[in-house]
Length: 280
Image (cartoon, rainbow, N blue to C red; front, side):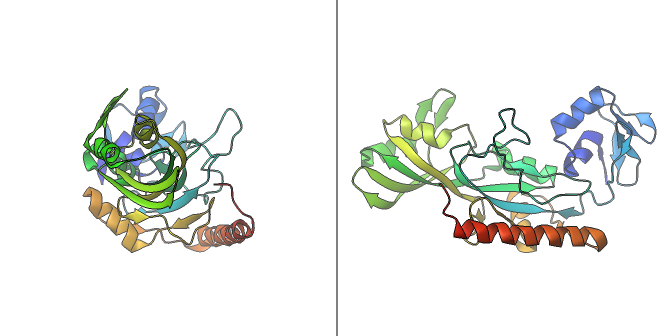
C-alpha cells in the first residue's frame, strides 16, 4: 500500500481526510523523520507520526470493523458536546490505533440505525452522494395525507437547499390523524425527511431510521446498544460501494481480552435496556 498521507490516515480511521490535511498543513505530521507535505505518499511500513506520536499502520487497509448502533432520541452525533448532552460515541467499544467514524448523522430527535466503521475510505464512500445509497425511515405523521400529497413528495419538492424527493412512500400502519409510513431518500441532507413532510403541512411526531443501504436495523439490539457486523455484512457494504473486500477484525492476546470484556458490558446494557422501557 502506498497512498497519500492524508488518505492513509483516513483509511486507518485516525482522522477524516480533511482533518488529516489540516494536520499536515500545520506541520504536525512527519514521515520517516521528515515533515510531511500535502501530496506526500507513505505506506504501512513507513514511520508516520502525529505530533511526535507514532501511528501503527500495519493493519491499514487489511481489516475493517463496522458497528450497527440503535441510536436513542436525545443523543447527538458528535464526539463531545459543549452542552454536556450524551453522544452516540459514549457507549461504543474502545479501539486501539484506530477510531470509530460515524456514517452520516441523525439529528437529536431521530432514533434508529447509525453505522460506524474504522475504515475511512468505506465511510466516505457510504456517505458520498455519488454512491446513491438509499436510506429508509419509519415515520409517524400527524395530519391528512392523500394520494396527491404522496405523488408530490415522490415527484419532488423545492426546499431551501434545492429539490428533494422520496423515492418510495408506503403506508405502514395507523388510522385517524396519526399514521405510520415508510419512506426512502437517496441523500443525507439535514432534516430532509422532516422538511419534506412539513412542506406539505404535515407534522412529523416520530422518526426512526430502519435501513442504510443493504443493512437493516437488527431487531436484536435494544435502543442505545450496538452490534458488530460480521464478514458477510461487511462484504455486502464494500460491494455496494465498489471497494475491495476487507476482513473483519481478529482480536488476539490482551486486545481480545479487552474486547470480550466490552462485549460482556454490552450484554448487561442490553438486558437493562430490555427491562427499562425506553423513551422513543
